[in-house]
Image 1 (tube, rainbow, N blue to C red):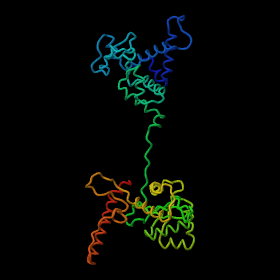
Image 2: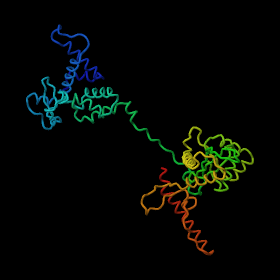
Image 3: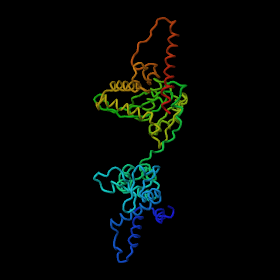
Image 4: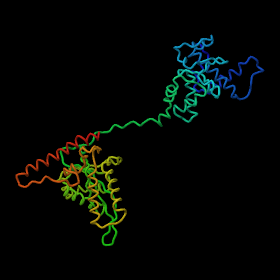
Length: 412
């Protein structure tokens, strides 16, 4: 009904409790005799009476046709939304749920709650205040707290629509925006060059070692291929510039010269880069066309490609050495075995199907075979050399095609 006098109060007042207090004061001072006017704070009975007046006014706005039918003693129309609730009017003219709990030993407000419309302004304010009283509880908890007083048509949908407006809850429950990832650098998707053409490097350690009854420290410089994820490690005596350069020279002698070296901003690496001004170091890098790149100073996550392998290497070393100091020969052997362990890890999905091919590993891309020794098809005679070379090339190409088809798409 458009001429309902309380509609304007419901629209203008943002608090459900404020509406109840205003209506309660109006009822208190609207009595016929001034001598019957109560004084002092509002009590619970007055607030309950005011709540029924508000609900009755709200029902007149949204269920006027049903209330008129019930007032005449008729049933509500079958097309009405409240027909399934078997509603009735109590002695105060408030429409309540008839339901099927007549024989249940429940309070009258829970057995016959007041019927409310989800479109009512008063109800939405009541839901909001109950949400705050329950310390920003979820929709199910709020609905359970309301069902003792009111029966809301499409209750869950109504409560959820109100709670979606709570900015505090949205800040706590909303998922963060997924960041837009940049394209992978060329070093990660380089198909034209062999393994270790683009490497990331970093130091880790120290490890305990003993030389002639003296305990010394040893470090490791890890090289990881940014394309194939293969790993190479060189043991160094210190982490200074000269040990670093010697380790790089050993790596080049064993794995070939890289095109690009990527590192973080550690003091050793920065100092080595500044040594490029030296004629000997500058000629060494220039002759081999080595391009040295540094990660951003404030972005340590850029080095995740080798930090993850450092964690795996440390775990394997800790399980092998168990904190014991070993000699240089044993330490070099352990490092070689850890390196083989890292290069034998699967890069693609490991299937349970026994007929499926073995998973792709860095060893396949380096040596064209898994680390475990497999029987070779040996043939005598120089006439077979060309055939064996072509067979080796086909094996390598097959592994690189698997890398392109199975591993590279996972980097999206």
